[in-house]
Image (cartoon, rainbow, N blue to C red; front, side, top):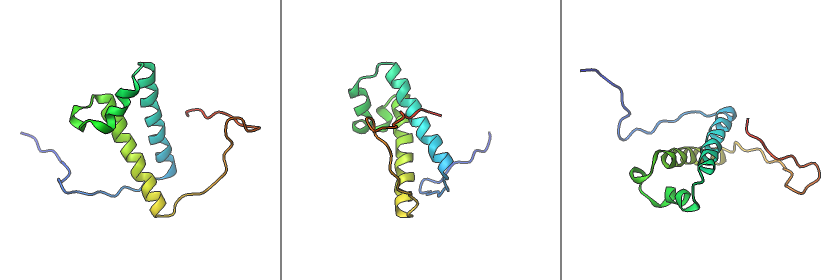
Amino acid sequence: MIKVKELKSDALIQVPVNRGYYVMVKNLAMSIVEKMTKENRTPEYIKEISTKAYQDLDNDQKSLQTVTLLLAEIENQAQIQKQYDEKEVLEPGDEGYVAPTLG
């Protein structure tokens, strides 16, 4: 028999997140979405993430749901802690607009 460590069922852990880590999580989310797009997943498949129980999702859906919830919590905490800078961003059609890229 071996001993393993597991979070307590009522644990609520606070983990500081810097901008670099936040960007990495966003890139992970985009990678999952790109994989789903390349596999020609239907819009219904994506919608199942918010309508099905977690245990009924496949691994790709679970991964996207998990990373989306993590991003939402990071953004929520940034809002509460007033850790946002506001800036103007060019939109498609604006002079000088450059499409974003991963990486």
